[in-house]
Length: 376
Image (cartoon, rainbow, N blue to C red; front, top):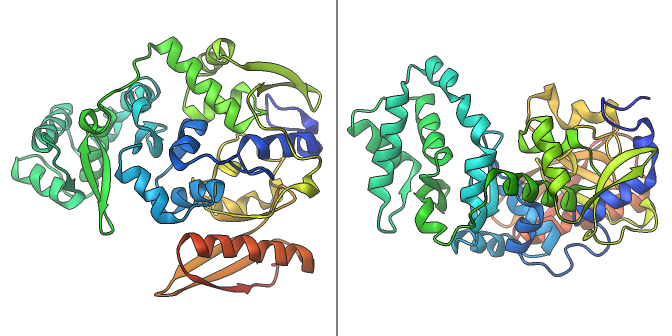
């Protein structure tokens, strides 16, 4: 089967691609090599974080720490949650948040006018909302999402319904605010300048090179098409970043040139040596690639990304490949897990996956109850 444009056709059957990607993604036998949550986020450059529970586990599965330890990195401001690219929430290193929002968020910000027109908002409304929020948060204040919306309404800014999300997004996309520590289950907002007081300053060329280097380091081997899709760049910008990125080289992989990084951990000898994983939805193993066929059968992709709507299911991974999905329900002391394999699994693989699901249960401090559904 031919690959997507820009990809080697043999990639989906090359075990070297699979083991190398798992090493880059910190999912190989050596894991994250003792990195703490902040360093894992810096390794990736950005980790999609629209679903907070999922991204906490994406970090946790690589570090072996529980959910509270990952949350502590956010609460301390070592890691920030904001909208750096693709118009979507990500975890990013605090010192890098400003240049990422500026250079990688430019395309999303440029396209916001059409969304405002649909919502009945003007650019003046959006700019005024950012100013009002910025003034209210000065001095270390944080406001819950609902408090932010109430403030905007009291200030005469139309913020009902979907307008609220757009205005809160816009303020962060402009670099005024970012997401702060949760108040219970509710999101809060804080000033970016106060939560990232020592920002790294990069011009556009350096920003492209930096994000390209981090992407290849954490996902390689990859193509320029992968980077362009992941960071919402033009293909020309992706290629420019790859050309200038330190440590990045193009090598023949599966019969075609792909990009690799000198700092990637050594890959496992074979896919059989890769550990089993129970990964969250939106994990980079699936999300981070334009062509996912090396780790996910194309016939199974609709089961992981139903309808192709951008919502990614949690996945079961054996031998480096996605073999099923799983769902969880958190109870007071237990977590009920429904595991749905795509095809029948042997006893050994089931046992390995139940251990992986047990690691998730430890992450959330619950006793696991796993129920397997029949492959359908």
